[in-house]
Image (cartoon, rainbow, N blue to C red; front, side):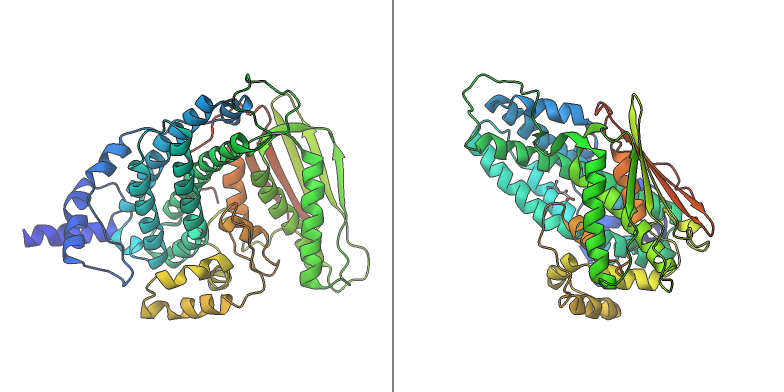
Length: 461
Ligand code: COI
């Protein structure tokens, strides 16, 4: 038996496949013996409830379906929405818990990944116990649980990002990126579902809503919950452009010449979308472009060349092309453009990620092992950061968008692509060496496509 366990132990610490024997024998064995590969290892518990929930399939949503729940909001539709969340969230979390369990043990023993696992396990246990929601009072109680959990999970993204960089040598980059993509898509999906339900509940409870009135379909409504029914590409680009310019001015000084943003094409194109998703992507692309132009021309007096944005509307899509003359992407970065785990400047990225302010607050809960003291001291220094962001809305994402331009985390582009693909769109980057970059963002404009929860099999170089 001992030899068998030893063999399985070795397997558990190496294999990255779904390995039944590892799960059935080694994880409980490790938990029982409290064997920790590193100090902050999670407490693994075999859970038949988890097995049961993993059997369930996620029921995909589309923007159209989400809008349907809220367009003519009645008590019964609100309760339907609550019960959809009630079943969907634990199902989706269960799949991700299982994904983490199938990682090699040395990988999940990483304190950041272990912390994320613990958060998810706690959320799963909490969500799966919620009984069917029959009344508005039940719903209010449920919304409190959702709000608390959204808040608790605010640091998941920087933790995952640090975690995958730290375990870089223990996993193949394509496996790490696939894992990260799946985790992020799933997180976006859960937050969309939870935030949409909270927004609907808020609408229902607002003084302007008359719950007993006949449902009326208002064709001029601007938004249904979190979904903006007529996002105007030009307005969003202008708004993100102004915010980005302000941030860059503050970082580089007001003397710096900032490139203008010219917008052309189908200026009236509109489509339904979740505004914060689009703002994240466009903000990230514009920030990259403006910064590239400024950094390339810092020593020159001439006015910097403008960023040219073209909006193109087709029957199914809106395509936004952002072109800059910032010199193109350095060749050593190009092969790793979409990777969360590979690429140059790993140490710098780790340091910068540790400066993400949201991470700091919860660091105390985490027992930081001695060999992570460097990271801890960076996190402690981060407490004094002037870059804190009070917005809780998108968890740490808002703190990532509100970050100063010198804080390069190395996840902006891959994260933007996860966002764009989530609603059946795409993001491509073409670098013209020595000249500039063209970014193509394609948005599915009808809102009828299901969310994309599966990831590309391998990340392209
Ligand atoms: C997450 O942010 O990772 C969550 O799972 C949030 C939860 C309320 C659905």
